[in-house]
Image (cartoon, rainbow, N blue to C red; front, side, top):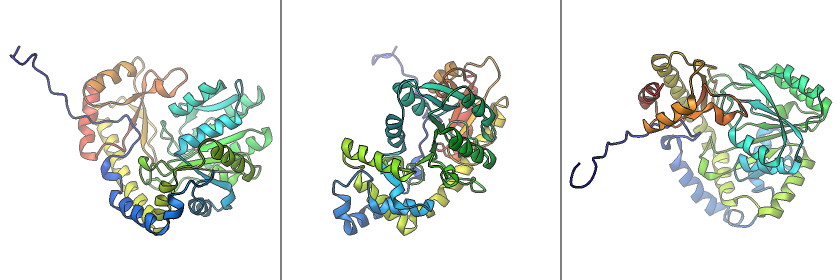
Length: 366
């Protein structure tokens, strides 16, 4: 022991696969700085006011045009998680039967658990949720809501096929349940665009679509939105007004400037290239260091879900990987039960040149 105390073993620099956030080099900081200045110059009266429940009306109009729907069918929120939480509290009561994908986004499961719903977990396939199992669940009793992540799923990485989208929308109309289309990754495909939104197929006012600018601008702007039937959006906007008056109007103004100027689309194009490079580097590293991993190749987005050999305990592996400076999230966090030999990699936060080292650290913990 040295006179100063026990010798410290230096910890490795962290290479994190845990959080679904971009690394700083993917955030368009200069463009955001310019847009903020422009918003405060041209739109300061709206940007610095209280606003109303729908949020920034100009941004609502831009989003509505993007979806090909009237502006009255859109409201902005403080991120898409708030949108989902508000919708769940409005629509659901304890004991309501709710379809969730297996696996699913962990924070959605937490929100629904807090309400006290009855979960109906449905397995995911390579082309999305098992719609045959959805039909069987509907035959057993009424369902109030189905939570669906259609594109580049978090955590599973899969994309819902066009046929399954059509079937789900038809089932919602026939059985009277709401589909919550949770779609923050749609703008980030690596090849072909994903199939049309469930919202665009809906003729029975049974789909409410949610998305966010967290993945296309930055998480810190906290701008999300809901799009759906006029009556539902109007009611939710009233609730928002009563609870917090309006979402962040300055952020809404800033994002609107990025949208109108074309900077948003330019940034999306750059980010897609960078994310695909990271996905490919992750897949190559898994092949070298963890060849037992089985996964659906994500066609876009942020995440890859891997199943390891039976008997692997990814909760224990995750604890060791964190110590090794390469944290990830074990599959159990995204499942109501099971997931012990599965894990989620977020590749958005890891530059390609660090991917091999990060996966090597995890492999050393197996």
